[in-house]
Image 1 (spheres, rainbow, N blue to C red):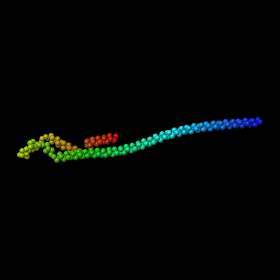
Image 2 (cartoon, rainbow, N blue to C red):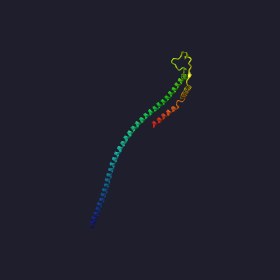
Image 3 (tube, rainbow, N blue to C red):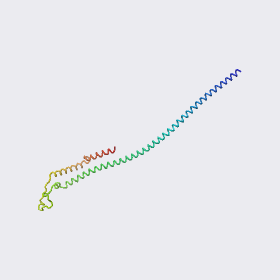
Image 4 (tube, helix red, strand yellow):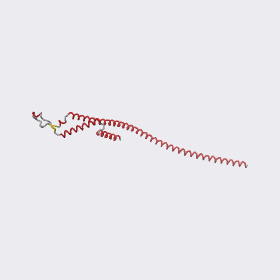
Length: 199
């Protein structure tokens, strides 16, 4: 009888122990499930946040790509315009230098013509006049006897000096057409203008 009672008590203790173990295991499961649910909720929130950030980043990337495309188009247009202006500037520089050379050639030709005129005509004869100033009705008897006289020696001397200077200038232009003061001044002015344009 006592053994039966002890066995019953032992069984009851075992049952209580099993129940406690099962309750403990159940609480552990519930805690694990709660932790998993919380982790899933956090993951869901993080996923939504990542999706939102991805959407915003995608929009920004698309906007930047559009701006980059427009910038490339503008750059190509500027390069094309710059190339055109460079070609025009090169043509203008060539025309300017050609014009300067043409001007100096004209000056040289003008000096040559002046020298030819001076050599062809007698300056001394142009600066004198007959002895009788009344040329309306000269006396036929004295027409052949009028001798030219020099009116002004100073004018003749000045004309000769001008002729000598013209000859010297013509010679200088022929010898050094690109080193004259006027040519150098014009060339420096053109170079300064080109530098200002390039800036």
